[in-house]
Length: 418
Ligand code: DI6
Ligand code: FE
Image (cartoon, rainbow, N blue to C red):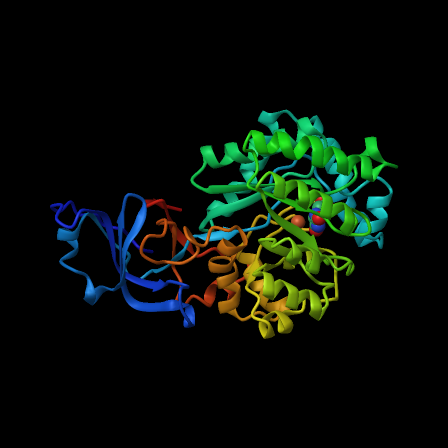
């Protein structure tokens, strides 16, 4: 365990802190960007200097107020979970049991269960209750070195409840040491009030919800579930048009259960990301490559649905589409509160390399959120969001199952042991 010693030296170079005796995986270059004997200088919550310790521009104690000796622990960028539905109430263990007995996800949804059962519980929960249950899940991620998390709405499906979810998500970012990006997912499922009028609901999303949510700055992006059991490409298109008018970025749940050409649709709107992608054609992947749309792979949902169709990883590599990896934390298809587990699943279920998996929760996860200028790699000028690990090599992060080697987190320059 790294026992971090602090010295209070004189302020010459003016850094707030410097980390020495640290092994770096910057994720900025090939081979994890490994620097075996590294150092990192921090000032005003940002990385002021990063490189080989022998090139430090002075003695550590002269460079910074605080010197942290990492005792050869590894330092990576703080982990980023770029796709979660973390805020919800209720529990779907009953449905899990039904699926184990053979019921399909689509059958349960058609019978009013699935997403709509979580909608009932989430609508009924007060803002305080929702915050409390969501905070418990969040804390599990924070203990694994997660410093940025995206959280979607989509279990309210009416104006008031969607806004409640987004406020809770924002509040989590105020109360806990994590950057929260919020995504409005009004187009997750057709709510019971609009059972036979999906177009009527889409009109509500476009004309009322998106303008109100944009006005209150409650969301950073807009997402949709483009699927036979959810919304058609045409309906998603009108939602993306409304998002564009309000200058909100877009993302899409694309090709999870069937190929409706949703990767192409996401690319046409220059979406930050298209997510899931199990059922996606080569043309869809080519369109994403051209548009700079990140592929977000979600092995937790693949696993829980016992899906057998894998996302087209070879095509993503062939066309150089950046691959991100996320938890999809949600009560139905990925009741997960671990991002590290997704690294192992990404390798075992989808054939990613350990390096691709780690890049998928750092560098490319940042890109999937449009945050690559701030986070995702260790580089000068980036936010000093980092995770400290008791591991022998960065590939251990994908190798271990159910073991958390995180020993500390640096969030905007501030260190805390975990
Ligand atoms: N795809 C998913 O896997 C989740 N949402 C989505 O669009 C499932 C959400 C749920 O079942 O509650
Ligand atoms: Fe999802």
